[in-house]
Amino acid sequence: MIKLLREIFPQGKEGWVQYFDWCGYHSYVFKPIEKTLGLIKIICEGLLFLLALTALILLFPLTRIELRVRSSKVKKKMEEKQNDKNT
Image (cartoon, rainbow, N blue to C red; front, top):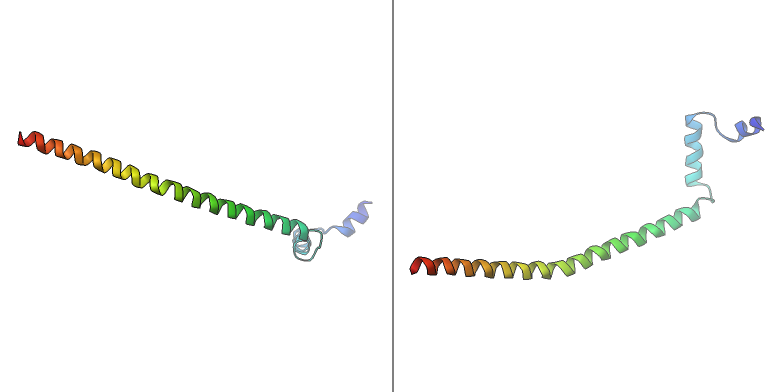
């Protein structure tokens, strides 16, 4: 049994590298797994893009509104300071 396994599996680093290269590029067993992982990757990238787009769409108007509110507060404070100096 051990002799059979030694004949089937490579003995050494270069043999294992060639074996895994063959598994990755020429074996039909790993093709469905590769296709499934590729599909999952595409779905995750799409969801991440939609999440970023949604965050941009939701947060951009909020930051503009916040900027307007803060600038109006600063203008009111500046006017109050000028009124205090004038009186």
